[in-house]
Length: 95
Image 1 (cartoon, helix red, strand yellow):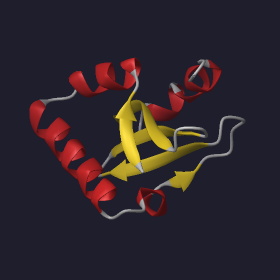
Image 2: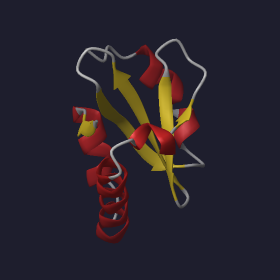
Image 3: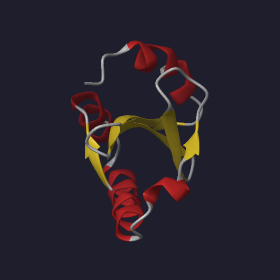
Image 4: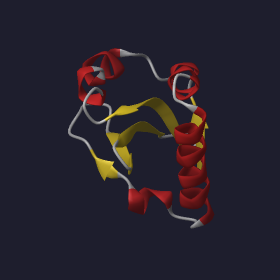
């Protein structure tokens, strides 16, 4: 199973400083390399069945695409701000 960035996910990654972005990309590559990246995510209670991944003080909100078996990165932000953006994320169309 592979991670893929949504357009908004790419935008949120570009907003980060270079060192933090590299750290997050390295962690995503590690999760993919294990063959079972789902084991590192934590399910969120929502109608879209979102997952959250932790990298230090940052959270990555991911949607499991049911047909393509891909993890779609929707948002990356600090833990202080990520949950403020969670409701708009849930209301987006992820197809």
